[in-house]
Amino acid sequence: MRIFHLSAECYPIAKVGGLADVVGALPKYQNEAGLNAAVVMPFYNRKFVHENEFEVVFQGATLLGTRRLYFEILKEKTDKLGFELFLVKIPGLLDRENIYSYPDEKEQFIAFQICFLDWINWSGQTPDLIHCHDHHSGLVPFMMYHSNLYRRLAHIPTVFTIHNGQYHGAFGWDNLDYLPDIDFYKTGLLEWNGGINPLASAVKCCWKFTTVSPSYLQELSTNSNGLEYLFYVERFKGSGIVNGIDTEVWNSQTDPMLPEHFTAATIAKGKQKNKQILCDKFNLSADKPLIAFIGRLVTEKGSDLLPAAIERSLTKHGDKVNFLILGAGDTATELALQQLKTLYPQNCNVFIGYDEALAHLIYAGADFLLMPSRVEPCGLNQLYAIRYATVPIVRSTGGLKDTVIDFGEEGGYGIRFNNVSVEDITASVARAVELYADSKKMLQLRKRMMGLDFSWYRSAKEYIELYQSLIPKI
Ligand SMILES: Nc1ncnc2c1ncn2[C@@H]1O[C@H](COP(=O)(O)OP(=O)(O)O[C@H]2O[C@H](CO)[C@@H](O)[C@H](O)[C@H]2O)[C@@H](O)[C@H]1O
Image (cartoon, rainbow, N blue to C red):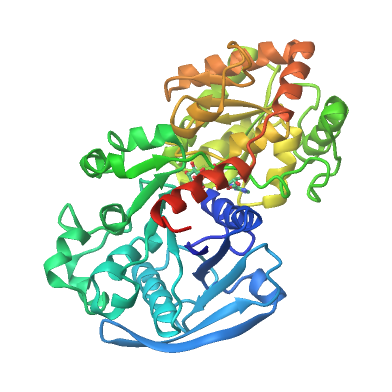
């Protein structure tokens, strides 16, 4: 079964968040299960493309409105990632360093999608299914089914996965001419709320859409940044499949980013060693419970509440708890966190920026990982924390609700709270401090977590079953 995954991000080539982790792992596990899955993404001028060899497998020219674009499809030569990797390179448009936030981002992603379709169309390829991820590839289903240029591809099923329903990639009708040779009677399938909305269009036009957890599928009907009614109407076309994690990358016995490897049998010693190294680095005491946060500092993640919740917790527990934050995003939150670091240098430290190796060390060295998310479609951080025996403290929403059981319940291992509020976070921190004091219980929970399986094997199988339901002959 030949599948193309289309995405703006893919680990280790280019990552901003969890989308990259999923697209960098799912195809690998699908191929292990006998599929022929490949990833297609934009070319970014980054370390990976300089350190690896590529061959040009296609060259073409296309139109974006009246602008003529020359493009190349590059293929990574070795398939060492466990899947074929193709990059769409367009000189002057898709050959820059950053993934997002250029003023012509809309042109970049529309061109990416057109070049992909041109390539498979003109090179005579007929994949069994095309799997699009998030709004950056959301116009592909519409163009495949309603552009005269791509009639040859119109019978191919499409699956669309929503990793984040808050971002839609919407733009105005004045850009309609970017879409090549479309059937004008069908433009309603592009529309939402007065503009062209790639996320809405994908949901309308794809054969099936998925969300990255079952709870998130329900929540989209009440919270999706204006698309609630669409998700309500289309709910029977959707299914929720919880993300897995790449257990080869996230393996406490082999992870090259960990100074100390550990197994379920050496948890206490192994984690303490990582914690000591982490705490030394950040001027914190390794004898106190360490509560960490990793992620984008945006309102979705509830990070705006961290400064007040940390300060209140430090006031309440005095010197008995430490905090470490790794992230970047909203300037106001970054500033407030930096101020906390100045006010409480022995109990709170902050690293503003992106650092993959530090993230691994924190998952292994922290005692607790805090995720006060307002919205969390699945969340991978809590799964990495569990994998490295770190107790997740999560708000009961989306995928966090589907993957974390409170330690007060049968078989539980985490701490859950209901409201995105300073009060609820502070109360959960208090539970964490109390739990940490019970070293026997902590060890029991850590062992329990290390015995859990959140690998891709189960989720990759669910995707394959979904594909099979759309391609009956296989
Ligand atoms: N400053 C930093 N330094 C180093 N590493 C950092 C970092 N900030 C974030 N990360 C890493 O980025 C990833 C974040 O993944 P998440 O799934 O938690 O969130 P994200 O919102 O990006 O993804 C969206 O897509 C994913 C995938 O479907 C969903 O799980 C999620 O709910 C949804 O919001 C993790 O691997 C984390 O370690």
